[in-house]
Length: 160
Image (cartoon, rainbow, N blue to C red; front, side, top):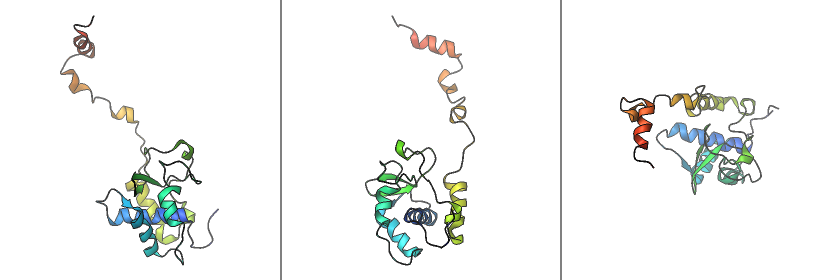
C-alpha cells in the first residue's frame, strides 16, 4: 500500500540517510551510527527527530544481526558501530531472508526516488551471471600447460 504522506517509516528514513551518505562520500566503505542518524536529522524528512532512528540503524535494519523484532536487511554491520547499505550476496541472519532491502518506490517521496535507481544501477546491481561460470578458466594457470589428469597424477606422486 502506498503512503499518502511524505512521512517515511523509520527504517526507510535510515535507508535514505545511508544511501545519501554513500552518494556524498563514495570513497567511504561505511559510516558510524552517529553519522547515519545525524544525516537523517539533517535531511529533515520527518517534522521532528524520531527516537527510533538509532535503534533502527543499530539493530532493526541490520541484515547480519538476529531480528529484533523487524527482519529488514537494509544495512550490514561492518564493525561495532559502523554500517553500510546491504548488497545482494551479503551475509544475513536466516530469519531475515524475506526482509526488505530497500524502500518500496511508492513509499518514497518523489525527491528520493532517484536513490532507488542509483541503488539498483551502482550499489546493488542484479547479476544475471552464474558465479560458478564466472570462475571458468581461472584454474588454467595451475596446470602450467598440462592436462588436468597429468596435473592430478603429479600431485599424487609418492602417495602410498
